[in-house]
Every structure is written in C-alpha cells, then in structure tokens.
Image (cartoon, rainbow, N blue to C red; front, side, top):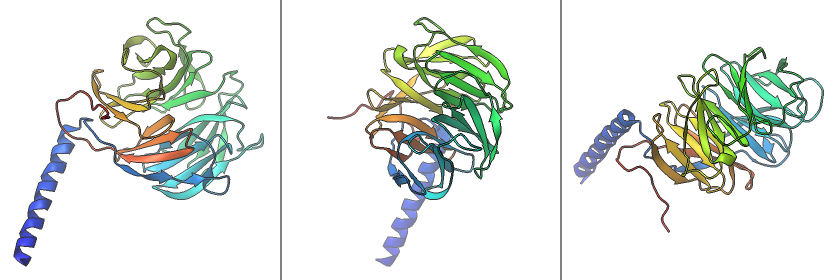
Length: 309
C-alpha cells in the first residue's frame, strides 16, 4: 500500500510539472481567477483604508493602495501591511484629493488633484518633491512607460498629456468627440512594451490605441465593452480591461482579438493592476475592498468564457 501511494504521488507530481511547463509555454489568457484574499481592511487606522481608488504593484510585488477616504498611500508586502504615507493637508508630503499614482523602480508619483500637481515619493514614503505644478487639470488617471515617462489621462478635458519624470511636457493629444482619436470621459490609461498608449474611452464604450507620439492607430472592444473604466497589460502584452457596467474583466491579445471575458466577482470594480508574478488586484469602490486573484494561464481555442446561469 505504501509503495502504491508513493507511485501515485510521483505520477501526480510528474503530471503537474508537465502541465505547468505547458502553461508557461502557452502564455495565453484562457484563464480562471482563483480568489486569493483581501488586501488590508476597512477603517481609518494604521494599515486601513476607507475608499480604495487606485491600486498598483512594483517590480518586487509590493502592493500600493491609494485611499481617497484618508488621502494617503498604503503599502503591503503580499497581504502584510508595511507602511503608509501622505494624509490630508497642504504641508510637505501631504495630499489633497489624490486620484491616481504610478510606481517606478525607485519612486512613486501621485496625482494630487486638489493641489494640481504630482507629488513624488521614494518607495519608503519619503517626500522628494513636486512636478507638473499648477496644471489646471482635474482628477486624472496615470501610466508609466519603460523609459520613465508619465502619461496623464484627464477625463474632464478628454486629453492625454505625456511628460518626462522631471515634469516637462513632451506631447499632448485628444479632444472631445466620437470619431477615431476622439475621447469621451476617458478613465484609464496604460502603456505596452512597444510604447503604444491604450486609453479606456469610457463613454464611447471602447479602448483607443495611440502610438508614443499620440497618433491614433486603432480601437478595440467596440460592440463588446459597455463602460471600460480601467485597464492593464501583463508581461506578454495581453490587455485586461475592467468594465464597471457589466462587472467583467475582458482580455484581448496584442492583435486586439478577444480571448476571454470573466465575471469580476466584485460589486463595483474601478481599478485593476497586474503583478509580474501573475496576480490580479481589483479595487472595489462599493465594497471598499481590494481583492487579490491568481491568474492561471492555459491553452485552448475558445474566444470567451461566458457566465453560466
């Protein structure tokens, strides 16, 4: 009996190893989202948040949560609280209505809508300085490219501004409308490894793609998306789109082909982030929680995974 158990265990492990190798080779998002937990907890005390508005991950896997309710940034190592910084005010390092942030290998940039500037911190939470001051822009989404340039997406002005990490404007583009290259209440932005800019054109029910200089290339998701509010790109340039109206995550490949659509399993998803080790984080505005899911990549030939009644 003991030998039979050992043989069975070896067989299972061998098959598991083979399956993992297959998944790594496929790298296609025919996937499931196994729920892995909640990051942090509700409240206004240390390590707690009231209204998570944005979530991000650094290259080491540390999780950053922007709490609109307390005007601060909370940092977690996996699910364990590490530190926090910011807090409401106008003094050094304080924040007044922050709307979004991006994290680079060395710094974190927070768009402070109330102060009309970007506040810069090191990853320990020490305030470094301010850039892009007196910009007269409303609450904005942000993205970062591989060269350290920052992209600011203004939903009110329906435009995108690309700046250097020193705050110097490089290019701006976009205006209100419905045609190619126009925007209507854009809520999210991300940049692919080749420098293409993806914008969730929320009220036009699509995602528009621009090159690094702001020239329109194409759109995806028309007829599929309802109200895309945020988006992110994984390590293989698969595009994940969070749709707040249908509460789903849509996944497109780099050619713009729909690969999957999965129920987000949350109440009001407003922001998503994908880590390099294959975790998906969703900020839920209604539940006031940040949920963690594991992305399982696999193979197949179906284009979507419909919800079952």
